[in-house]
Amino acid sequence: MWTRHIKHWQRILVAALIFSNGLNPIIFMEWVDLMNLCRDQAARRHFTALFRLFERGEYSRAVYAFDMTNGRYEYLDGSPAYYTNRSQRTTQTKNDEMNTTAPHTTERITDETTPQN
Image (cartoon, rainbow, N blue to C red; front, top):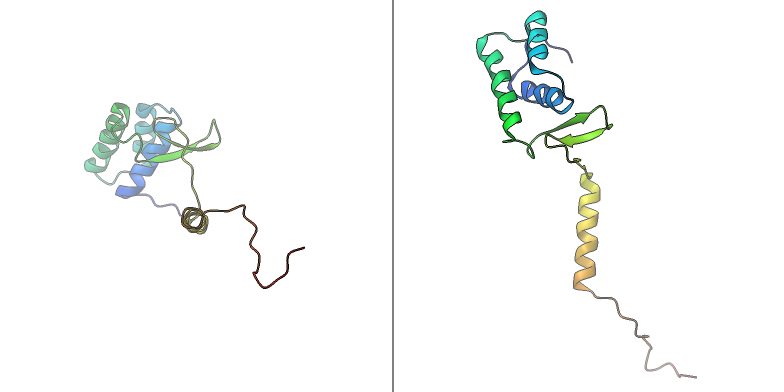
């Protein structure tokens, strides 16, 4: 949904998208001024501070965005961000627990009452 004045978290997401795709922050800030996306100077300073933090690498593994060149989600340091669905995470955890608590044996289980041929 499009809104003219974007809020705090939306500014972080937009700045991450711009940074991860290599767009010049100065050109982006000129576009922000042209489109009047910042309600006040504090929002404009927030964008500027985010770009400075991203360039220093302080949030390189905390935020990820879609990289249009590679066609995948990447952290700000360029490493791929993989997402596992919650249902797959719980299934994988249950399978791991089953494998660690009940080791597989290769012995043949036979009933003592059944005669062996």
